[in-house]
Image 1 (cartoon, rainbow, N blue to C red):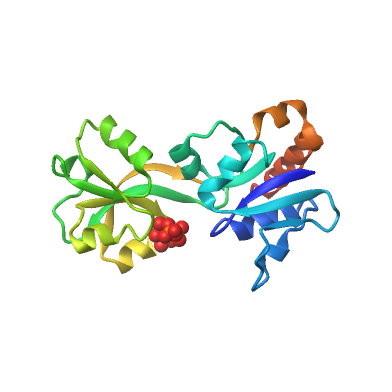
Image 2: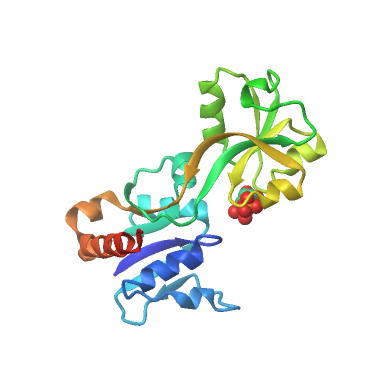
Length: 215
Ligand code: PRP
């Protein structure tokens, strides 16, 4: 059966809405108290796996899911061996460098040599600061990275910004952006090539829905 890996968190609602538009209903994941980790849509056409954002490409890379919906930020950080087949346009955000509003730094290049950068995007941050030729100490964290500068552990953070509310509420300001991100449809390359479970028709139908939505 066609299996789709869906990310818990901010992309879930829009992912489910998009799949509903091609007749695949996984809205049971949104019901309060739902603890199921996999759901078969009522037509019996496809199954969805409910996994952490960062694990979506893992299920797709190993072929346990033929499709997955995940942020471009995750693809950039994990560099999985998957086919990126569609930009789904929702889930817009950016990966940015931020510092305390009261700090003297107003661009990444002003950060001190060997300054500390707290982030859960270790690979992207390393690549970015190497590109600037600025030696920094990357401090890996798994969440609430804003606390890095607040507690004085780090000079800056590299983190996702969507509305900017989290930065504002914690007294931080963006000083540079690494890249912009949206949700992507990814596929297990072999299944996509062999058109397993009529994958290409599903992708085409999703693409048609997105085209129809484009103003
Ligand atoms: C992300 C990110 C920020 C927040 C930014 O966290 O790490 O904390 O969203 O969004 P905003 O600009 O709209 O305030 P997320 O909610 O994905 O959870 P996380 O703490 O697990 O990263």
